[in-house]
Length: 125
Length: 152
Image (cartoon, rainbow over all chains, first blue to last red; front, top):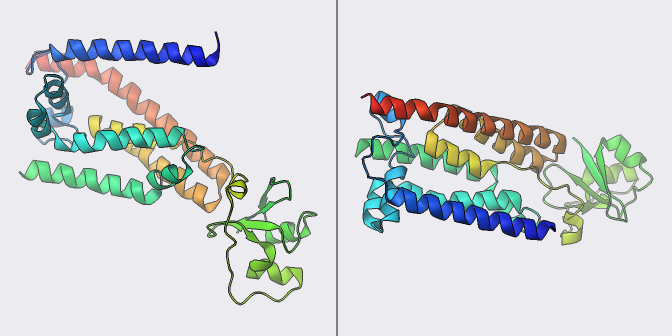
């Protein structure tokens, strides 16, 4: 099997597994006791930056976009940016400018500041 | 300060000290040189400190020669930063090993820009290691959360 063919098979398998997980997850009850809960929230009562993303995903899979947005708004904006950053990291040769901007130390500093601000803001309101 | 020298075949030599650079057989006033702080490769005669050792008058202002894509290729590829994965781990699991990984990702970028390629490679390996630590930690502690949930 050639490398390209093998890669296409891998993508197909990953896609099928991902779709299956999504369908199963959409059927899981919202407050199901078997779902893992954030340890920070459990121990301190404070919300971590990612708290609510599990609910957001469940609501999104049910088509409740506004409920998902209220569960964790930050993850909606951060997720595409994270995917783009991962892509830029692996495709530096093809996208030199993109990688130079997304992986720049200043960009990383902005990430950390935004995550910190979001954590403070969501715990205040 | 380390210098890199591009040969006429676009091969990169370095890191070199100023003495090694001037002693190189590939070194001439038109040879392309790079050091930390430069945005692109410049002709040796345009760099004041290098021009002095060539025995020619230093230019009043160093004018950077616009680098072609071909010249950029003399720089090695940036080592992986694993930044995207590390940020996902920070946001979703708020874990300390993932924050260490983000710090090393910053080091990869800053060292690469400075021309410290060896240091950038080392930071990349550390970023990968701390990312794996945070993932393993997350998988190991997941059953504990579920059990904790069930008993409260």
